[in-house]
Length: 255
Ligand code: ADP
Ligand code: MG
Image 1 (spheres, rainbow, N blue to C red):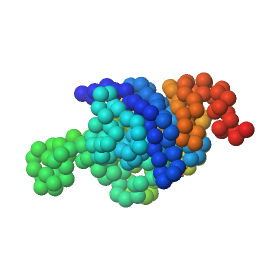
Image 2 (image 1 turned 30 degrees about the vertical axis):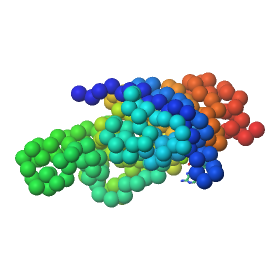
Image 3 (image 1 turned 135 degrees about the vertical axis):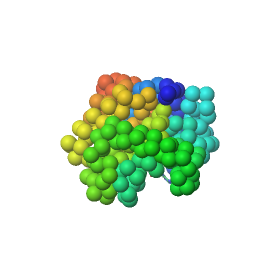
Image 4 (image 1 turned 45 degrees about the vertical axis):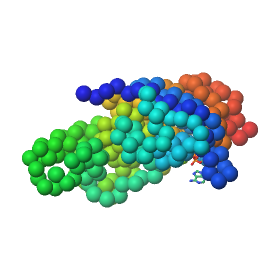
């Protein structure tokens, strides 16, 4: 039985890179079960924010908490094990079939993992079957069931992006971090991606944090939006509220 997600709290986080402040005292809270978008122009600090959430960057100051658990200072695999899974802005999967890639995600869940399944121990065989069944369910959820046995390299760009999301979902996350899920997609692929994210959200007990450049997508998917510009939080609210915010318009239109 899956537990409900807890609030994910970014509390006054600052990240510096050799003289450049990539995130400057940024705070926001992702409500359990919600879709929270982090938007902003190029270089605003969106990916840096994700890297802090997933443990790749350690902030100079500030804290990230998931429920009562402090995430700042934990290694990326520990954060993933707490149920916080991410995708990357650029596709990282190029080898194996869709099924292979999803099973890699499943193996990251089990302590026994590859060793005992390679030895064909009975409990490992049973476990392997259960993982395969779940990987197929997740493939179906994101619309990849037809491609389960296809090499990832043969898929369209949009489908490869689905593989990335499905692989993250194979960790059974309580929080799914999506870094620019529709970047590089054509209009049809974007519309499909919106449907996939909606389906995932409706079917699974998780919160979604979405970093995105595409305002249209954010408006259609997000419950709450945090807007960054030059590393600072310049606005926060519902999509309708931030869309009308003069500071946001200035940041996007450069006026
Ligand atoms: P976004 O994802 O919103 O486009 P980033 O978080 O990638 O923005 O970058 C924010 C700022 O931090 C940019 O000015 C970028 O050049 C800088 N930056 C990001 N990562 C690094 C790094 N590893 N080293 C130095 N500067 C970086
Ligand atoms: Mg980025």
